Image (tube, rainbow over all chains, first blue to last red; front, side, top):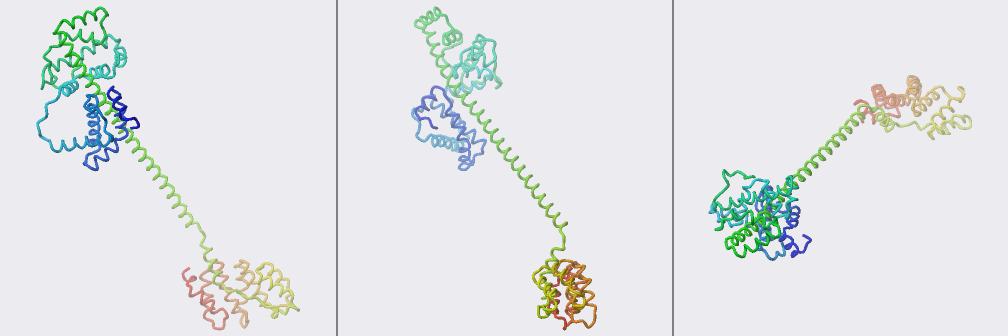
Length: 176
Length: 263
């Protein structure tokens, strides 16, 4: 929390997630206490809730939806958590809002096998080159890593092109 | 989400272009085709959108997995701390139990092994009314200097020295009863109860001797000192019943205290 807020925003936008990780590490117990005391949320649920809030916050920053960090970031995140708790209490049984394009891609991403997910995360988020991906994944060389990555993108695109409401066959993870 | 453009026929070439896998000539030709071929241009735009979305998804998933992993680590650390605290408490309790056990054992040992006599010895001295000894007038100091010296030593608490002085007095210079009586008194004060009883009993058993009554009281106290409590009780009862005995009140105090009867 010692970093200036503007710098935090910049770092998050270029994919440096350290701020979020540190926040979770430092505030988990405080948040758990707060959620338990004010909203009767069990510790394990509180941990999950804080992770969901931090993910949402990170998405907002990465999307450019959040262009200025609130002065009291903790209060902001806690109010996001409160909204989630209240929404869960009030909107149970309501029809699910249609997922956005990215949310759908996120859902389909979850249907890929774990190796594919790792390769795509290494390449598209961490920015590793094929050689490093090969090293991380235990592939023989960079060419194998490139072919594997191509296969994963193709698989994901094929899932996307099946249209909305389409899920992976038998809900099983697809791997190459 | 499905794009109107089918990327499949273009995927390989678009990836090679985007990932920098083309040779410089091939890349130049591809860029020229992009300017001229509408279908390829649309496919490229759709591919760029897909990979931008994929970058967002990859970032989101990376953070989600990192948070889950961190959560697991924090849980493990918390569990380890709780386990450690539990272990510390357990060790602490064990030590407390050991210390308490040792103390209880030591106390029990002390209770079983301690000598009962100190209490009765202390009690004996608390109740004892000592003989004042003979005054210089009574001893006729000019004629019996050794007796005077002996009495002085007795009053000063030097009982062994007083006894030695007493024994040096010639037998024709001091009555037998007086000699026996004070020998018993000095031995009693010197802590030799058994010796004192011998002398005091002989005096107390002699009829028509003024010192017999006094000797009976000191004999009772010598029994007490020797821890012969039933004998002490019997003798004290005799003294307490004798109105002519100068130690009657002292004997009654002893009996009223109930110490000899309880023993």
